[in-house]
Image 1 (cartoon, rainbow over the protein chains, first blue to last red):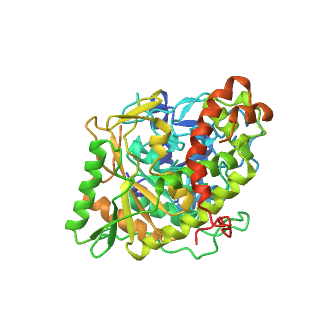
Image 2: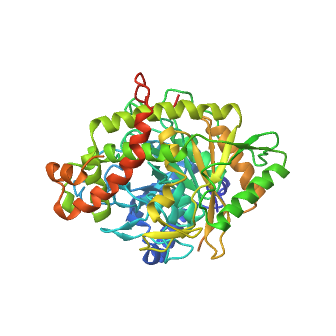
Image 3: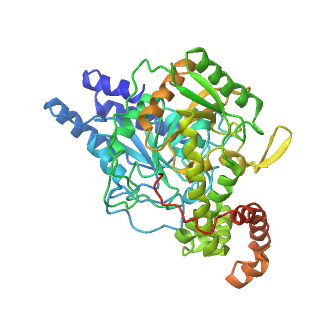
Length: 458
Length: 51
């Protein structure tokens, strides 16, 4: 069942929120030993909240667009009264005494918060092989990673433990797990969703967004969480649009970019083939598929790495490094050695690149790429072979995602097929800043053409 | 190019991490420095919001 289907069933009185929450808790209890998707499950408070909402609904109250729907939050979002671990033992402090802006907005929309999902330590990595809380497993094949760093959120949605979950994306951390777990994952434009009350990693690169089973569910969630927030200095004051695409969203007449450089270099063959099929389907449905030459994306990835190393080490440089896992500790050490001038030069390059990239939107409405060049690798693998070349798993997984954080552009990953092992393949769609309504419309159009609907791994 | 081992020693990088940290930064620097050479003198850092 999708969020929209659950919303409809609740409004029609076919099911109660308490029933949905109890089903969700039962599924978590059954699957958690295999998946390890959660760090904290707040079953009791969720059931209490569901009863409150059921009571209010029975009394004729309008409880919000997400009223009674169980959702989860990555364990970076503060929830009053619940510990925020950040997936690390380095933050063994007291429980949060305030809600993040996203928590507030979800609660105001009536969502029932059912728990906090597992992540790569400090959201600083993509495997979710967490040294403190254990590896999160991919529901499609539990010997494989879910991707990260929002891997617990993606696994929970893919396995039907929750209807939707929130993630964060600093270098692909929503889109990579969405791609590896066969869910929808939306990274809105930088500044569209408040970062207030979320543990930071890269101040100028962090984005908050939903992971769901369908594009329309992602639109509903974005509608609930988008908006300006004076407590986040980077929050945009642009008005929020209506995001929900129509049921029969069409691609007819839209200009869809097909990059001839970078995004199809060193790609797993069945990933390239699935994305190619999506492009052909779009063209057959009346879209104009236009080949485009993008600016130097590899250079943007390099700039993104320098910015992230510096910003993350500013955040994590003072924590007891002995308490960090090895991979995160090494990244923090790297960032501590870079010079202030390196950071400033990276930000100067970023500005030049943002300007160069903005010309693309004169040619196309969006462009499509694989979300990741590979499907989910095995847990513990440090390298993968792609087209005969060995590549570091982290570098390969972030290769097509990181530059969009540098640019701050909205991007979404939707399922577009399965590889020869039955693992999901993600299609990434990117559009111009603050064009989420158009992006979601296009994504819904692709979702319909691809005919994959709502994928459930287990 | 920067001698990252020396920088790491001076900045207190744990000795057991020095070689790995230096190797990664050396590769990153090899990709980053040519980009920096292209920055016009008047270029300013990015604002955080997309334009």
